[in-house]
Length: 331
Ligand SMILES: CCCCC/C=C\C=C\C(=O)SCCNC(=O)CCNC(=O)[C@H](O)C(C)(C)COP(=O)(O)OP(=O)(O)OC[C@H]1O[C@@H](n2cnc3c(N)ncnc32)[C@H](O)[C@@H]1OP(=O)(O)O
Ligand SMILES: NC(=O)C1=CN([C@@H]2O[C@H](COP(=O)(O)OP(=O)(O)OC[C@H]3O[C@@H](n4cnc5c(N)ncnc54)[C@H](OP(=O)(O)O)[C@@H]3O)[C@@H](O)[C@H]2O)C=CC1
Image: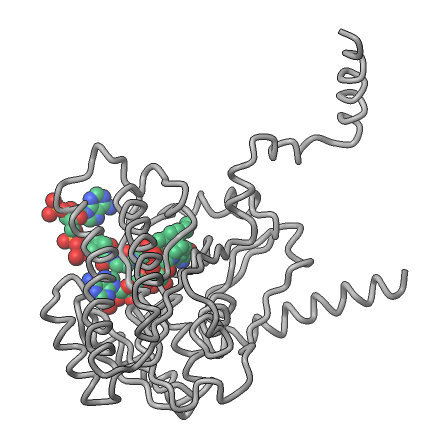
């Protein structure tokens, strides 16, 4: 009994410790917990041995904010020289300075709209001049908003699919070609979503484009292994970021319902996905290619199972149900 109480206190202390660490390095917003969350405390410190990315160069698109920022912080902490690229140079520069001053490793900010293949090519030119070609590429940039499909204009459709599918393809093809020419292998990682697999109403351009990204990465995993390239995919479940939640849960109503259906009782944290992305991009995962990793606290299976709502049936109600079912014997 005493051991159980001490175990629980230890887990809670770990939650508090790791939340404090995340606030320092990743600046994540306050976490909300459901009743089950104490079983699944998020850890905030880097999982891989220090120096795992020494002499590695990593490009992270959308690395100035949210999950991309967290991935950059972790890779930089582990020794990588990082390049972060997106449209807003001021935000990129601020993030680069903050992370670099904490880790002591250089983070470069490069402006790039991934929808424009010429801008992508110039970004890679800039990168080659700054650091040489990368060892790690994380295609994380995205655009999204909830909207009934009948309200979508052609340009709304084009905007999301251009950022997500074409942007990922332009970055991947530009770097892939140059790496092949230079006979240098690399790890490519794409960040998609759990609904890339199931589809989802109200985010149809995003669902379609993310499914396309998954097809692109699985295809290239098969085709470009011979050039030393690995291609993997992480499908995150909900992780609070300003970019995602302001566009997908503008009133905040969605969050509680989401937490209630996640078996681990909480949202994910940026530091957790950063650890997974670092592992997948590292040499520890050199045998991993073509993998699709769902990272969602169990939300996908919770949404999928026809009878999962029976979680709300009480033990007393089960006694009654069992009698009713047993009474069917012989009928
Ligand atoms: C809460 C649960 C969380 C679970 C999360 C699961 C998955 C998450 C996936 C994600 O991808 S989250 C990442 C979200 N982050 C971002 O979206 C950041 C970047 N986003 C943006 O910059 C903008 O939101 C935008 C619209 C994607 C692109 O900006 P910009 O290029 O400036 O486009 P415009 O503002 O010019 O708009 C283009 C086009 O789209 C129409 N439009 C814009 N917003 C809406 C809306 N809310 N509803 C309907 N239509 C919209 C806009 O009117 C333009 O079309 P026109 O025909 O009028 O030209
Ligand atoms: N947070 C979550 O719950 C989930 C997130 N995801 C995925 O995780 C990734 C990160 O999302 P998150 O951190 O939450 O959201 P953010 O909005 O913080 O990140 C999106 C990033 O994409 C960049 N971006 C957008 N458009 C372009 C463009 N045209 N060219 C270059 N960069 C662009 C933005 O920078 P800028 O504005 O400077 O261009 C921004 O840094 C995305 O792929 C998203 O789909 C998936 C499932 C769940």
